[in-house]
Image (cartoon, rainbow, N blue to C red; front, top):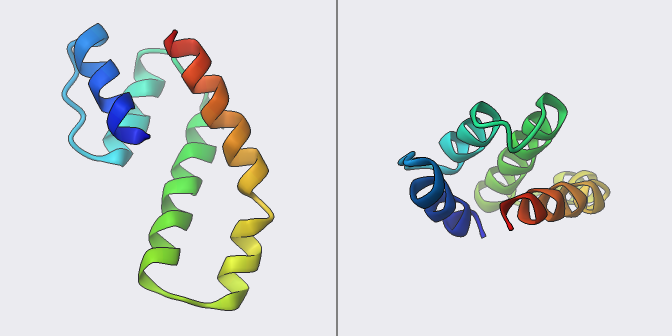
Length: 82
């Protein structure tokens, strides 16, 4: 999904965000997300990285509890892109 966000930033705002973290930073810079949403998106990326590199049941349970918050913010961003 972040690939679509990078394409959106490039097409609409002329920004070439080459990584997921830069994508969230540029979303904040162009006012597509507020500070709280920006921080949550970065937390989501950190959690994704933790799960892909380290499998630990405690990490999984902690992240699982945050999934709804991540879904809500991703839906908000997607709506704003329309």
